[in-house]
Length: 268
Image (cartoon, rainbow, N blue to C red):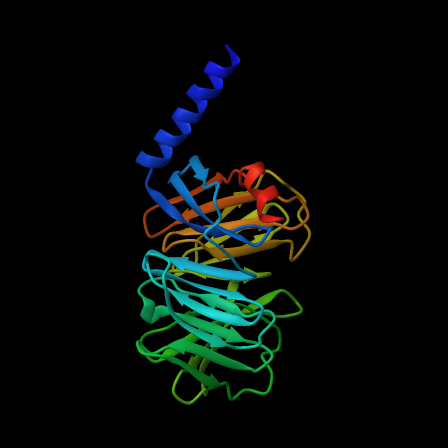
């Protein structure tokens, strides 16, 4: 009966992959970029990697990935649109809507890289020091960008910058945010030892506990895997989650690991 059970399990998996909506595209710890299918609390990870990257961000309209210092903009079907040889070892990437929202913070160059619709444009930032670590970047209107910066005392600043001049437009402390912060639409997502804290635009906060409690500071990595879905991974535990967050819904789900066989094949 074992072969029959195996066949039925495979058939069910294939059927789910065919019928399930695409939740997004996520980068895993082994560097593989994989499609995630399903709905909150019912997710599947594709067995075959789409690509390999060191950093990634995806929206419903495309993706931005970096590997060995080469930043590539991808269309909705994964086809290459443009690339930029940044030489950056740890760029901060974001695309949260159409391709026009494509932006990257290049910390070693102290510069913003954004997509004009035709090419990448680099803007040097006119500020001597951020006073902390930039943990999130997003376009802010048509000609500005916003950085979230975590300071040594765990406070968080939102710094708005001109994409034309690189000048600081405004800098404000976010009183309710602490630790490493990530911008999701108009929300701010922060980490704490219990998991995540989601701050709404009106100042209300909600703690979203993770199954791995007692997480050390800086343990979580958050990357966008589509416009409304965030991929959350823990370096210390190897666990993965996805957070579905928009104006009307918030839902945390465990993200299953990629199939073991595909991880072994990608390591060859």
